[in-house]
Image (cartoon, rainbow, N blue to C red; front, side, top):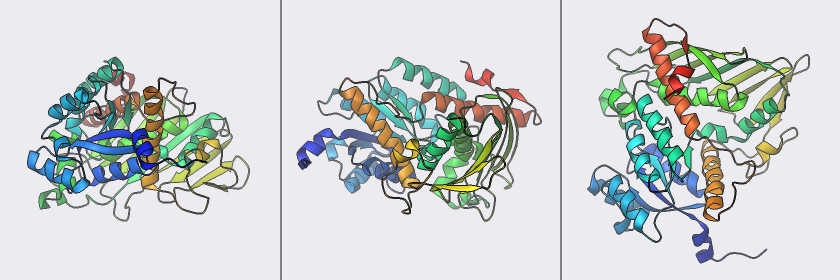
Length: 395
């Protein structure tokens, strides 16, 4: 097999820009690592901070040329769209309230968007962004990274193949403990914006991590939400947004769901998990052991399926990089979303159809996530009543 020289490899990489993600920003670093794991992208431009000086300093840290470091995203979108070798895709890693205006500027110029979740901070913005994405020739990718894990793909494949029969019960949970105290008052940057309604939106824990659990349940089962009933709490005195959420869900077709998301649960660092029960069996996956999937056929012993091991199917194999027994985790899951997006972007670049099997969350998933947050907040404020989910999805 011929080895490509470095110039050829560089030419094949997708030219990537980034908005947000400068110095001290956790998620920006995650996106950059994920984009490079499979060598599909090269970061060439960015508006890394709302402060021009900080943006240029961050660009220097990252090896981005000074003339491609921008003081604001509008300047960046306009100039990059005109450049012969301008960016092909932009990663948006800002606080939630900036997702819509930033994405809009790049979409209308035909630049592909890879956006952190949730889609936007308000349902009105989510609906407008959905229309902007539909009107654009560019792709829109939402980084619900947990859907990139191989054994999550395995679970989805098994559900779609009918291994569980008709789905009856879906349980999702995402407990954390890092906001058990009011650390937003101490200057902790991540806590500050996530607990600020102006930057985070209507939801606290329900938007930050509840949307991950909600999307995971939808992704694995393929079920459509019909109604939700939510009880949201702000247990830490003085906190403006929820830090604990209990949600009941009704799905079209009769299945029922339960979702718990909390950021005040001591002993849980990042306890994302799901359980799915059907007429023929059950599945269980826990994020802290992401290479394992438990399958219990009805009336038979519980059995362990492993990434790269016996029982794992094509869906898991196509997003695995290394042999079984070697752990793959959070960064690789993120990378799978980036690489799936790269396959679609390169197909567009070459005028070809997107390859079969390419799967990543998109604008519809994002709109559903913001609709879910809004419905849960409404339900809770009205005393914990059932609200019809479809009403929030309609523009």
